Image (cartoon, rainbow, N blue to C red; front, top):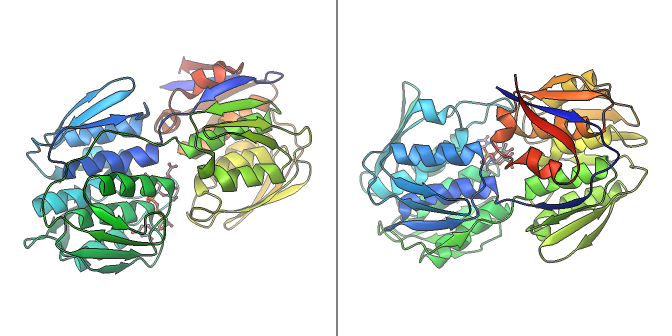
Length: 420
Ligand code: EPZ
């Protein structure tokens, strides 16, 4: 297994090119199950989760060619509709094939994804919405057996909670349904917006894109023509590198980024003392020497994203004062806290609220990544810790960050990927 060895340097400097968004890529790849021909995708990130979903599709009979910048996926030869446990257990977002497989074939079997390190991750809202659209759902031996013998019918769905992949699943199911589906309390994340935009350009009429109420006019089972598209930039990767600039008090410029997707993150960094120069596709962070404490509550987009919580918690250990961070989406998303405490951070947890007394010197040591974003928080801490920080189990990190150590090396960080 690989690990990352990080040593403190005086400061970072230079540009970091942001890759395509993992969480946009996953539904966009699943969406190709709805296509009547091969589809070309630009800017897919080179991360493990994308490879996993492409492998899942090839297990179902699809063909794909993965290039450095361009990938083509052809699902015209899909032969089977069973997403097996061996794949789904490695990436729960595989549940995103449920809606499109059902829409196209009227039946499918998808392994229950199970939970993950950060929480239970139920999919009850996905299943309830599909049942409303005329699906018979049977849970048997750890699999979801879904059939819609008369096809899916458009209807009015109201999500009790905002669910990103739940919204994506139902959008894709509704795309081929008979009639109109409205989704109320839909997720408004940029990744969901791009899925809607690509479908809308492919002949699936969608009203309300970007709002909490979507109206999707299904094609009544007809597959769609999906033109070539480019995946939007990864706002969480971008936010992570902005935190790297803030925590090391270094000026960094991010390119190929969409600043409008980062408003809540930039606003919190401004509260903590950073200033920014922003253009249409770039962000330069001008960090302050004194990092101010902050109060953060994670919520759905466009509010502060849960996927940036761990990174800001690491940054808060260096603020002069006490910060409060409340995690409202997931029940167990503070596993980076114990590792940061081992580095000397002064953090106390009370349920879903972390209190961070900043201004502590961190010391490098062996730390263990527990989930994707916790891994990046430990890397951020390692950048400013005294001594050497070895971050183990970085297979978690490789799920969602494209060439992280190379991007940081290119801005002068002392970080190496080594073998255990
Ligand atoms: C997506 O997960 C992201 N993953 C997550 O990013 C992100 O943290 C999360 O949205 C919230 O923004 C992908 O897009 C692949 P949810 P998702 O359904 O869709 C509850 C990362 O680091 N819920 O929006 O699985 C759920 O328990 C990953 O890149 C139900 O109760 O999250 C949670 O409390 C981690 N029933 C809340 O809703 C359901 O049927 C939000 O979950 C579905 C969800």
